[in-house]
Image (tube, rainbow, N blue to C red; front, top):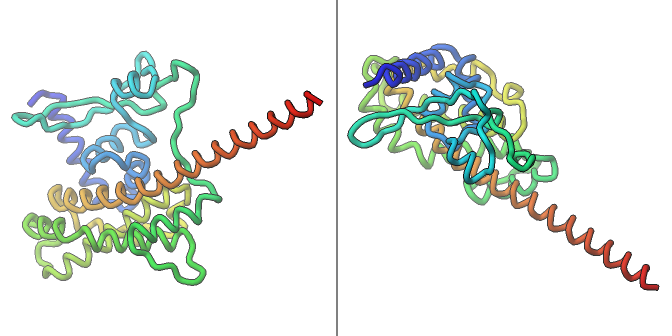
Length: 273
């Protein structure tokens, strides 16, 4: 293992311990993870440790070739550990703030707007079986979707956790109690991420005390199983929301083009008269 790879492995481990020991740090981590939800948990830890303000990370190849953006001279990459089969190695990604457009076009990061709310709620209801109750708002739907998604996807993660909870605060607890703590911690974390990415302030709905359950997952294996579940469920939810929001933006653009064409057509008719 190279010296830098060793440093990154140690950084990931120390960051894992820091976020499990301090709910405030866990909340900070979840804010970063919310913007980088397409990355797995171990990558999210290293992104948070090196660039907690990162909002959109990609490799230099993706920035250059797919997104037509240049990485600025002197920009420092975010090192991530990757499994290369026979050995571990490092790859580097760069945040959007480290790039500039070749054509002066801004990068299109999706953002929820008020008119998107009804469509997003409907998407979550259809995708995760959330049943709308009278007066139910986006926050309630996000929480319901997170609860249902965690319930549906937690079995395998809990099974692996039960086999690797030695030396953690979970070690002496019975299996139903471990499962309950796992689901509660995952549901709060997924909802916190979804609120963040949807532009809502999560601290208005989820307190530091609500997040304190992460403290039971105080070993790297235990936190890794919890984190893997959280990142997988949050990615599934946020991809659904992203697809809905982007579809709304496309519809808006089509309507604008159609309206513009209608105006131009009327202008031509008037000019002909």
